[in-house]
Every structure is written in C-alpha cells, then in structure tokens.
Image (tube, rainbow over all chains, first blue to last red; front, side, top):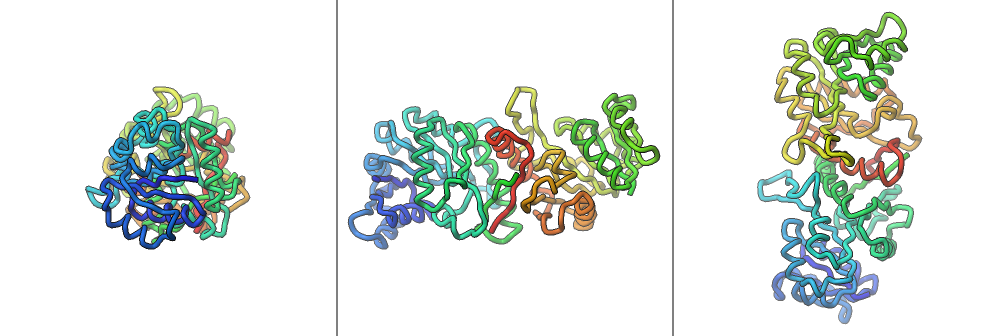
Length: 217
Length: 217
C-alpha cells in the first residue's frame, strides 16, 4: 500500500521503517523537505520503497496517512498536508496532545470533553480518522510481540470500514485480531488520550516505557 | 480496626459491608444522620460491628477513613467530617471526580494538572491521603478474585506508612501483594482519575463494568 507517515520523530521513524520492512511504499512527510531526521531515516532504508517530502508530498502519495507528528503540532501539520490530499483517506492518528513545554510530567492540551482525535476529524471532515496505537511506545507499536503476555490496542473512529483497514494494518504489525479492542466512535479518543496520564505515572513507577495493559474480565 | 466509610452509595455500602465481614468495626457516615441508604445498609449488618452517623460521627470513630462519597461532593463531605477528626489518620480516597449532571458519559471536574486526591490532601494537610481502588467498580474493589487472571490496583500518596496500611487492607480484601502497584506521591492520582475516561469507554464497548487492567511487560 502507499502510505504517508507524517512526522520525523522517534514514532514517525519507527513506524515508517517498519512499514517499509512490511513492503509498503512509504513517504515520510515533514514541514520542510530538507528535514535532517527524515534524511537520516531515508539513508537507512532500502531503495525504491522509501521517500521523503513535505507533509503535502507525503499525503498526496498515501492511500493511508499516519499522523505521527507531535500532538501539539498535529493540526498545523495536517493543515499543511492539505484537505484535498486527505479527503477520503484513512487517517491513522497515533499522536498524543502532550505539552512538554512546562517540563515533566507533560500535561494534555486537550482533555475531558474533547480530544485531539476529534479535533482532527472536525478539521478534516472528509478524512476517515482512526485513533490507535497512541497508548504504547514506538517499539511496541510495531513489535507488540516484545511483550509475551497478551495485551491490547484500542481503535476508535466514526468510519467502520476505516477501522477495518487499520485493524488489518495492525495485524501486519503483529497485533493479533483478539488484541484489537474497538472502542466505538472517535469520541472514545478522549479515553485513550487521557490514559496517557496513567501511562506516564506507570512509566515513572516501573522505570520503563516498554509496557502495556491487558483488559481482563 | 475502627473504620469510617463516608458515603452511602453503591461503593460506600459495598465497601462498608465487606469491611464488617472482615471483622472491622465500621461507622458509615452521611450528611444527615437519618440517611435512608445508610439505614437500609445497617439493617443487613450483624449487630455490634456496624453503625451509622454523620460524616463527623464516622470520622471521629475511624482510625482509618474511607472517602466513598461522590467525587463532586467529596470536599464538602470531608469538610463536614472535620479537620480534627481526620488529622493523623489514613484517608483512603476511592472517589472519582465525575460529573454526571450533563448526562453520559460523565466528564471529570478535575484533570490534567490537578486531581481530586491532591485537592483532598491540600484541604486536609494533616490527613494521610492514599488514593486507591478508584479504577475498578465496587464489586471488584472488595472481591478482586471475581477476575481469575492477574490484575492490578494502583496506590499513591505522599505518606509511605499510610500506603503500607492501605496495602495491608487491600490484602485483606483479596488483592495479592503483587497486584498492588505503587505509583508514588499523591500527584499520580491524576493518572488513576483520568484513566476513568478510558474505563468508561471500555465499559461501554464491552458492556460490562466488571473488568480491570493488568499491566504487562
């Protein structure tokens, strides 16, 4: 599949690299075409299936667009990607609206009665936004088998077919079908984003970011 | 132990009843001494180890005080309990600051850079506040064995000895030592309270409130 990965941070590079490994054709998008993180990433990729460009270049290329930008920059990045380049496409939003500007722990810039996922959907009504993977770190996003025990990933979005596409992609990344919990519409992004406050406390208490949760009944 | 349980809702009645079963001497506190929920609860309890009274009556009795009031009413309830009746005592806060006044899903009245647990600790600096059990429903609080798989309960608070007392009480309720995750100081209550947004989404998606999470690595 032709995939756009917007964002050149750890999450963007990790996800983009794994998608190339899985034989997808990936364009990594950034604000400026000459982004050094994107260039560094590109240098490690096999020829032919990886490219870099602007947010708009990437989005124009992708049949599916991954938002892996910093949460506080996501709306601007997606605006730069361009409404026409997003229209009708599955927009997999893995970002969290974390503000690190006041030091650690970061606070959330959107909470409670709204979420970044919803803001993105409202800003791009023709995109088919699916929130997923934002509850685990980059390594686990693309290598869930790093944790032996069963654990869960949450998806939500208003377009069932788009969620199906994302579930299939999650399967390629190693998430078994039974590990994918459908939380319903995009408003459930409030839950998975606000969970970050517990995630941060757990990361601090356990001294690792390589953990996840399993829902048990 | 002499325990006060403040609150006469489902959580208060369930926790108070289980503590009586475990041979503690419980006084259930409410705003008005003639509270019908408290009276109904008392009628089902064995003689000698259960009583009802005002918030102040209960807090004066308890060596340990459980805040099981509605989160939006907790600060007023604890003010009514009285600073002198709380001073030096372990105050186990199981409440969530959920506001149901705008319908479902409820929103949180405190989030992000503050929490109900912290507000209670600031309002009662001589109480030794420990936040715990607010991430599961009433049945699971007192019968964690209802879920066969391992699952976790989170404790946080600024007084390590108070957390130790709570961990011991959790053990009596059936939470194995390995299931108790210490998240550090009371500021981590932000995490366990904000998790409620995910809890609510999971409850809606799975159709049950009898679930919990297991942290896996």
